[in-house]
Image (cartoon, rainbow, N blue to C red; front, top):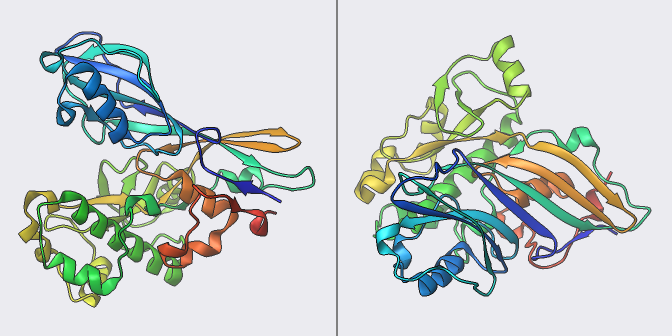
Amino acid sequence: MINFHQNIDSFFVEETLSYEPSGEGDYIYVQIRKKGTSTRGAKLRLSECTGVPMEEIRHAGLKDGAATATQWLSWKEAFQRSPHREMPGVEILRESRHSNNLVIGHVRGNRFRLHVQKQATDTFPSQEVCADAFPNFYGPQRFGSAVYDRDLIIKGIGRPCRKKHVLNSMQSWLFNDYLSQRLAESGRVPLPGDMWTASNGKTWFLAEPDETLLARYKQGQISPSGPMFGYKTKISDRERTYLAGLGLETEAFRRWGKKARGSRRPLWVKPEYHGLELSPEEVCLDFSLPSGAYATVYLTHLFLPELLTEPIGKWPNFTEQVCLSSASV
């Protein structure tokens, strides 16, 4: 029987920034290793230790709390009142400086090592399957305890509030719903009118599928993209039709202000697969993903892909032990 239970001894993630701190500048950069605490929790402990206001401690990406996670944090030196010291659950691995603060998007990618329990007779997906692209859904942790359906989304878009995370959750739900519909209708086949994006989702371009484009898609360099709907999001006719089916249009997001400009996100993401480390009772799934992709979605794709067609409330909660044997090959 194959099982996975996400905790500090089974889920390891290491963040890679898109640049190296230069060693000079007004901003202090620290690389931390945190265990069993969220990014917010780690920032709170650093704030209590150094006197830097918590809102002035910046991160480039959020990391799971039920994990051993390595990431970077930064703050302006002028805010610091005391040197950092040993803190429960947070270890300082490295300190440097740079000329700017961290912001969301400064992460190039994350490397994951997931320790999956097994019996000697169990088999795993092949290396080819593990290295194949998977649908780039937002994982359940994106939504916290919030439960959405179409009616709530439609009403919610029409009732703006100051909480950016509420808007982000609704945009993420719409992206997941659009991707789910597309998978049901055409699978992973690129379609005419697709807007393509690099694997990191930073830029996009419009092009019709040809031999060169499809080869780059197969290699994981690019992917058709989907919308994080907003009033400035460039969308295709297909995406406009989807939104109209909900009784919405992009202008509906304008009342949320600048935070609702929107963006685009790869529909599929190809992992950089580093292989399996085997023992009689454990497998280490070792892989890297671009920034924004979810290791838990990848794990669900490998072992329980049928659940990705179900409402997100039915997806596995890996912070509890989940049996994966039903989909092993």
